Length: 353
Ligand code: UT7
View (cartoon, rainbow, N blue to C red):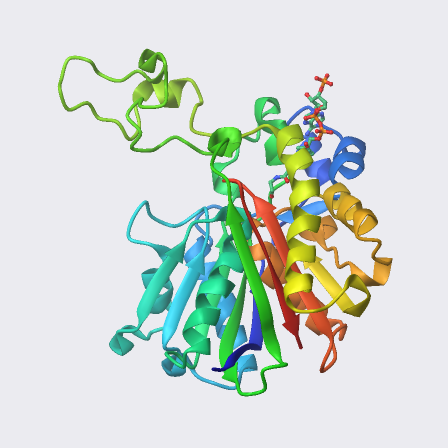
């Protein structure tokens, strides 16, 4: 059995920076509120028609591939994590393959829809394929085009100030040393309150979850109503994501430490052995709570949400890319990745660099 090592990392963020002061001009919010509650100072948002999550993913992937010292032709499996894919279907995995010009390879392309924990889910899946020797170069990408789907009026301010666009990618390869690379991964889910953080419209639920489906404006005159998106959904602005922020926050500060400790225990390590934790960048206050609960030092906790906001599936690989740029990891260091988000889904990975 092999272990999985991260052989190359890349990131891409759009050029346009949107500061909290820029948001003040779009909605009733303030730089002070956003900084105090979230730690975010600015985020990157795409200009119209500039990129998509798949094209940003391809740009990050090309860097990761180069850093790994391979070519796109060497990739033998693609995993793409996003909640903001280009199309309802097909998935971003095949689009990424096309952008990389490797359609002749006929490699598998898998899409992961686990939102904030998509990257960890992807890593666990990739790890199984690498361990068994099935694949030698897996490309794992997390990318999000959030800004195109946010309500940037005052009505949507509780959510729209949090999210940024961007992409991160890693190339995963086998390593024979079983004390190197990914030591453990753990992934979990609990769908009890799946809609607490969700974008349910457009969708094929057809009113199934609603006591009164007339709120969606379905056409009752036919036995085959058009369920994906009705005019009423559009008129009532139901197409934007929904979040019960406090409920998410309360669960996140419990689940992050739990799943980090679970990973460390399995690996036979403690928080003292950890060089760096890269938490999914959801909210600086969540990261600070987690740091406090786990009694980690400032040096052990990496945060860059200040510059990027929450980039969901992209946040961990973007952060990892910056960690490497800043030279914060050395051979043999223990790195912990952890995420929590919509679903709820959550997970962790313990890695020896
Ligand atoms: O990636 C994982 C997914 N997401 C998360 O992890 C997010 C978890 N939750 C959070 O980060 C926080 O709950 C938020 C940052 C979203 C909100 O912070 P909060 O301290 O929970 O604020 P709140 O939602 O309780 O709102 C407090 C007040 C409300 O006004 P009233 O009712 O007290 O008058 C909101 O209307 O703040 C108001 N508010 C805003 N004010 C200015 C909400 N959004 C804004 C805003 N600017 N952008």
